[in-house]
Length: 262
Image (tube, rainbow, N blue to C red; front, side, top):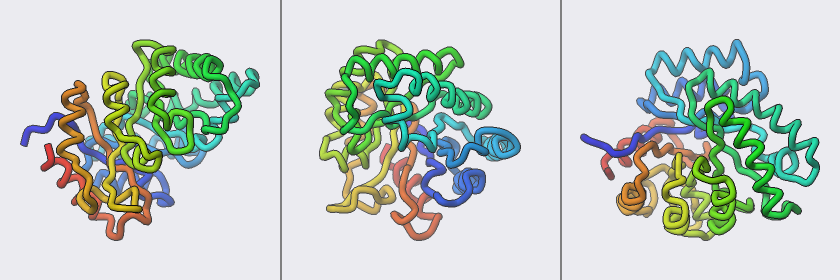
């Protein structure tokens, strides 16, 4: 089977399993592409970081992205008018950059500021560019995710930010967050198709916004066609909450389902 896109999974699917055990489980499920969701400061350094790298190497996995556990605090840590805190926050995020490089990742995923953040768009972009530049100095990208109740849950805001940052802007398209925001992923693909650098994927059915692929009614074949037409050919990672599925083997079943959709 020839696939235009790699299908993998995020370690976050297995939270609150310890991150190293979650990554090992992702490897055991046969995923060759993964995202690591860090859950504690100690995971950013040895011995745990070394264990994560050893697991990645043992299973021959590619870690495309890492996700900070501080995403819930980014409104205040990175995207406020208090410049000193922003600069200190960027210094802390350099720990994620170091860990990402140790794991061979390409990007650090952020949620950014919440919708109620009292920050002007120009200042938001200014702070983002500072973080972006710090990541680029270490050979990484910041990838901004579209998240419900966050400013970049709006395709218009995300596009304006991308225009401010320029050619190096990257985004993570999360399908369940599109459902939660009531925004079609078509809007992000139309406005930012050439900026998409990672896709978080899940199924949906009625009020349930996040299911194992194949358990709902979402048209993945149509999504993959739109992504392909936009020039996206990297990876789609299954990202669920632990209560969204029963047996862990359901993740590998979802992975196979997605592979067959291509």
